[in-house]
Image (cartoon, rainbow, N blue to C red; front, top):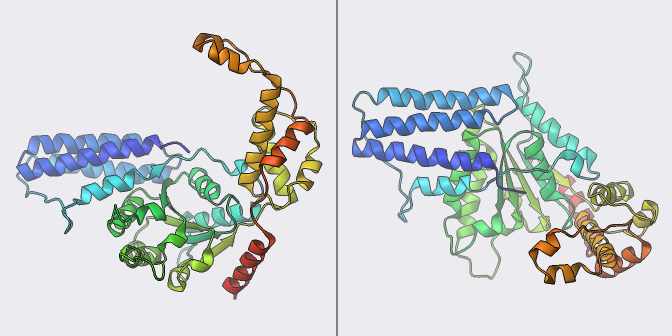
Length: 389
């Protein structure tokens, strides 16, 4: 998943907006006007990146606001102060940090094997929130979704595909990173994160390792988790968007749902279990990992599917990489010699490939084994039943 180019564009926008504020504070109206015009230009470029007319219109309207601000600066205007935290950090610092969390996903719905029902639920929630309703009718789609299940089942991929498929700004956050005691400003970053998401609506905020938000009993609790919970709960309640057209979808993911506080869990209207792939999904994943990478296999897919019970999607990907690596070693025994001969020698070498043989798969199965035990699956099923009650 590469960094979104529009995220870099938005970083330039925030810098220009900051220059406008600072110039106004100094009383330099001409410089402030130039900065506002640059903000307008950058926002118009960002608007062109959207496939949807309504989103483009919203971003263009923001650009017009900056143009209007530039025009008003022809007359004297009061200075604009930059908000400052008690610790001395400015609001701009947190806004910049929030924008750095924007990523552009290249994952498509079709890149995910199986989970068709889950994909449909996500699309329906998005469509219900943004589509026009009959006059006098109020309908609300899901705004908070929790993905839970064994590791490697595609929770992160689903969130990435959601942002890409819905043309939404994608903020990808690891909760454990935000709670670092060295950072110590997780609650302020959460506020800046959701403020940016509303401004760049529609947006998807993906909170990975969500169980980390629960304070550990008996540990050295710095209070960061509690402050973050206090900040996050109102955001999940949607208090800032009650009367706003902004749409922010929060998707949280966890491998340990039973560690999450009940009050926090109650904010997620939709809890979706992402299980290990069934036989049909495993065949789809295997075909994606083999055929989309230009390879083929002598061993029938039905045989591979039968041998991969309890494999997660991530483990299936590793399995295929191991088999392809074994085949590559087998068919290119002189590759290392070409490397030793220098850059020109290796640049002129053509990799040879053949269909994956049973011997390649045998080595791969020795290296990659399913890590989710039957007891783990039973624990997920039990929690799922309790959550549905």
